[in-house]
Amino acid sequence: MTIQQKHKEYYNRLSKLQGKYLNYFVAGFVDGESSFSVAMTRQKYPLLAKGWKWILNPVFNVYQHENNKDILLLLKDKVFKTGRIHRKTSPYNVFTYTIENNKTLHKKIIPFFNKYQLATKTEDFNKFSKIVDMVDKKTHLDMEGFKRIVDIAFTMNAQGKNRKYSKEYIYETLSDQFDTLRKSSETTRQNQ
Image (tube, rainbow, N blue to C red):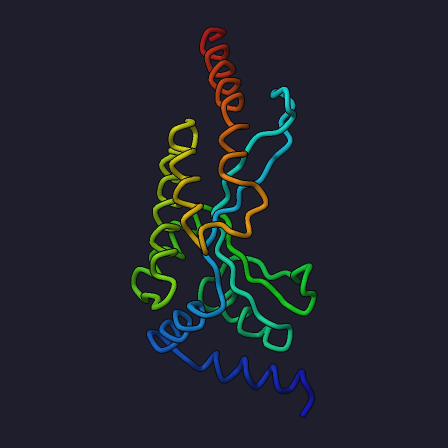
């Protein structure tokens, strides 16, 4: 049996799962092979002296070796009907299923895992759910709300030990972002 035949057989067997059986399988699988996280990235922004601003990006990822990519296709095509699958840069033989659109997270991922609960990732999921809700309510658009989200995010996934930027660095570089944005919106209101 070739690898392609084996993958097709595996996908077909999983595709036969229906309703709650499929959903409970997905919850168990995600409990072991996923992450709920909040990426904090710097985005170019020429209006600021430093030339960039902070962006908060809640992300749901499921990881799988290329030999089992079919399970990611099942999640994308049959269960959640959204998201994208891409090859990870390192290790290269791993694929990632990703959903990072906040509305999709709010409408599909959060309700799914509220109904089909996780066993080991419950705490991170609850924090993730709270952050997605805060972003949906635009809490992140003022400095205090942004900091509250950063505080929560740094308590997730082993207290953010693999983060590129420290919480202190994010806080140190945050104030001019909100000062400039506030001044920009005040200028816009005055010109109307």
